[in-house]
Each structure stands twice: as C-alpha cells, then as structure tokens.
Amino acid sequence: MSLHPEISAFLDLAEESGNDDNVFHLTTPERARDLFQRSTERMHWAAPRALDVQELSATTRSGGTLPLRLYRPQGEAGPYPVLVYFHGGGFVLGSLDSHDGVCREFAARTPCAVLAVGYRLAPEHPFPAAIEDGEDSLAWLAIQGEALGLDCGRLALGGDSAGATVATVLAILAARGGFPGLPAPRLQLLCYPVTDASRRTESMELFAEGYLLESETLEWFYGLYARSAEDRLDWRFSPLRAAPVQGVAPALVALAGFDPLLDEGRAYVDHLRWQGVPVSLREYSAFTHDFLRMRLVTADIDAIYSDLCGALAQALA
Image 1 (cartoon, helix red, strand yellow):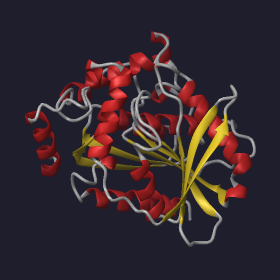
Image 2 (cartoon, one colour):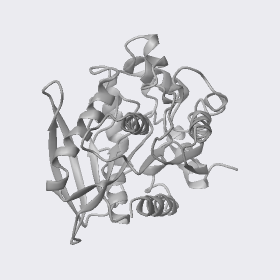
Image 3 (tube, rainbow, N blue to C red):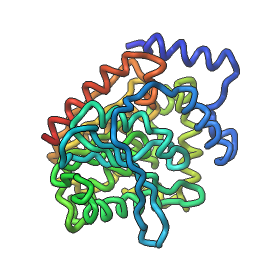
Image 4 (cartoon, one colour):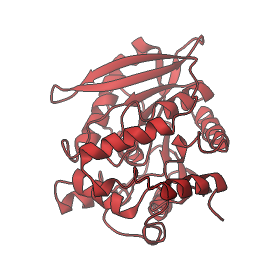
C-alpha cells in the first residue's frame, strides 16, 4: 500500500518549504509547544459547531486544577453515553484546544457526550502525572456525571497517541477495581497508541523520518516524560508490559500504516487477544500518525470518522 496521495503532497510541500514544525526534538519543550500550536492552527478544519460545549474542571489529588471540556449533542435529551478522551502529543505537547476538532467530530457523529481531559504535561510534570490526572478525571466523573446528564453506565475511554496510552492504562486499572462508583467501561478507543517505550521496532526504523512523527521525536518525548530509565519498563508507561489484562474492556484499535508506532500497536492487539480481550482492529494503511487531525489535508478522513464513530455508537448503545 502506498501513502495517501494528498498526505504525501502535504508532507512534500512541508519539506520543500523548509517547514520543520514537527521536528520537535531539535528544540525545547516550550518552543515545541508553540510549533505544535502553529501546526494546529494551520490544520484547523470546519469541525461541527452545533454542540453544547462546557468548560469544567476537577480538583486533583494534589489540590491542583484539572481542565475539562464537555461536548454534548445539541437539542437531544440525555442522559448521554460518554467518551472520556485524552489528547495526543507525546505526554509533552497538546491541549484541549489542539484536539477540539477531534472531540467535536466524535460528539457530533455519535449520540455520545465527549469529556476531554487536559492532563498535565512533561517535563514539568513527569510520569506518572498524566496517569494520575486520568484517574482523577474518572473519580470526578463518578461523582459529577449524573448531574451533567451523563450515563456513566455507558462509558468509553479513548485517546490518540500518548492519550491512547492513558486511556488503556485506565481501562486496565478499571478492570482491577480502581474506580469505585464508576461502572466498568464498555470500550477502549485507541488510536495509534504508544504501547512499548522500552524497545525499538521495525516500523520505528522504516518510518523513522519523513512521515510526520519521527522516531527521534518519540525518544525525545520519552526522555522528557520518564524520570529514569526504569520508568519506561513500568506497564503504565508501556502497557504492552501489563499482565494480566483479562477482563479489560473490549478495544477498538485504529492504526496508521506509515507510523513508527505501527508495530507496537499490532503487538498490543495481539497481547489483548491472547488474554481473551475482544479487539476490533482498524488499520488505515495509507495514512500517517495523527490522521484524526488531518481533515483539512484530505476529505478521506471523513470515512475514518464514520467508521470509528459507528463502532463507538454501537458499543455504547
């Protein structure tokens, strides 16, 4: 399978223009965040606007404030099933705003509400801060969900890239009884997840550079997120190392064919299936990492959203 022609043209244009906005490992975290915001603005698309959107916050275990954003279908009676969504960005980049369009697509194309979580970022807040914020967001949801018109009995945990890592770790914790008062999630929606930061795979070599996410950038992210080399062996950092995972929510896993993370995503699918977890794998062979934010690059992303949202709606029906 060849790279999608419109994405190929997009990457070629960026290279010809000398645009290195995605080569984050050559700069500082602060500058990388500025570049990521610039790329977010450049890739902005007309995501659905006819939604009720509410800015919220939770208090974390340390007394801090955790930003949340709730998207609900407009004009429809609740209670709504809910997707708790964690944005990508290598645990270093990203925000509620960077993935606003992604959350709007999921909320508009399903009967679900979407609760986006603005977890803390490294290096200021290293591992396991993102996981702890995810746990605190679910503890908050268990208390506040009903008042917000949410049906937490129909719950999915989802995210893309590093955010998918947070989601699947929380799914494992939920299966181990980690969230009193919150029913077990029905689905984990994992889009091109980080699942094993402890080793290099063939796809990390094949797609090391030139395909949006670069392997050196991944290593830079991991180095900023980890407090030590041992952290990368922790299953909450590398969930492929988690055992056992029996009883974890069924997974819908979406992978990109031209992505350094492809092989570890496939390995995680095998890991879940081997332990009896139902998995539906969607491999979008012609696409790169971060395809959920590429609607402006190619209208073919619409079909991916339709596919994923149909499966999400069915799981939470």
